Length: 314
Image 1 (cartoon, helix red, strand yellow):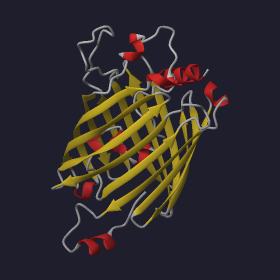
Image 2 (cartoon, one colour):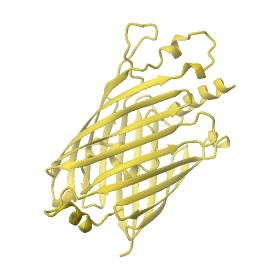
Image 3 (tube, rainbow, N blue to C red):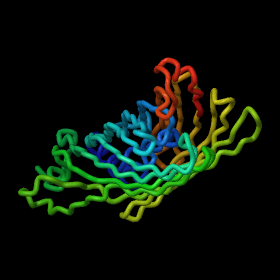
Image 4 (tube, rainbow, N blue to C red):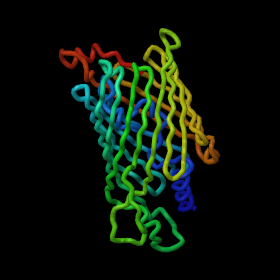
C-alpha cells in the first residue's frame, strides 16, 4: 500500500500541478525564481530562505527548501542564484541555479529598467527504489528513469520594471533537453524536464497614503501541454505588514500574510487545496525569511550609515 501511495504522489505532482519545478505561493517576493532577467534588480541585496510543505499529512507529499541571493554590479549587471531541494515521495531533485543579467536603465535607482537574463543550472534527479514495489523486478522504467548524475541545463528571461509600480517578464526554463531510451545503459545523463515558459506581471495600486494594493499574475506553460495560472492580490500597510489572497487554477486558494521589520522580511502562506487531493491532505504551508543587505546603488559612506538610510519596501 505504501508503494502505491508514493507512486500516486509522484504521478499527481507531475500532472495536476505541473510541478516539474518546485511550486511556490510567494513567488511575488522572489522574482528570480521564475525569471533570471530580474537578477540584481533591487536596490538592496536580498538573502532569502524558503520552506514549503505541500499537502500536509499526505504520505510522501512534496517538500521544498530553497535559498537564494542576488545583487547588482556597477548598476548594469546582476548576479546571483539559488540552491534548492525538492522531494516528492521516493523521488528527489537537488541542484543550483546561477544567474547573470544585463540591465538597461532608463531611470536611476532601478526605478525603470529592462533586464536580459541567462541562467545555468545543475540538478540531480534521484529516486529511492527501496520505497517502491514494482510489478517487474528491476523494472528499467524505474531504475533508469532517474539517475544520480548532475545534469546541466539553461534558462533565459526578459524582465521589465516601470517606476516601481508595475512589471512584466517572459522566461523559459529547461532549454536543454535530452531524450533517452530506457534500455540504453551506455547513456548516463538524462534530463526528464520539459521546457517550461513563464509570463509574469503585476501592478501596484496606491489606495491611500498608508496602504497599497499589489496585484500579480503568473502563467506557467509546459511543452507537455499543461498550462496553469496564479493570480494574487495583497494589501500592504505602510510597508510594515501585508495580507492577501491567491488563486491557482484547479489547485488551491491561498492566504498570504507577512511583515517587514527593518532589514528583515517574513512571510507565510496557507494553501487550501481545492483539487481532489484536498480530501486526503490538510493543505499546504510555506514560510520565507529574507535579510535585506545594504543598498547596492547608494552613495558613499560606510556600511552602517547606508543601512540607516535604507527604507525597506514590501
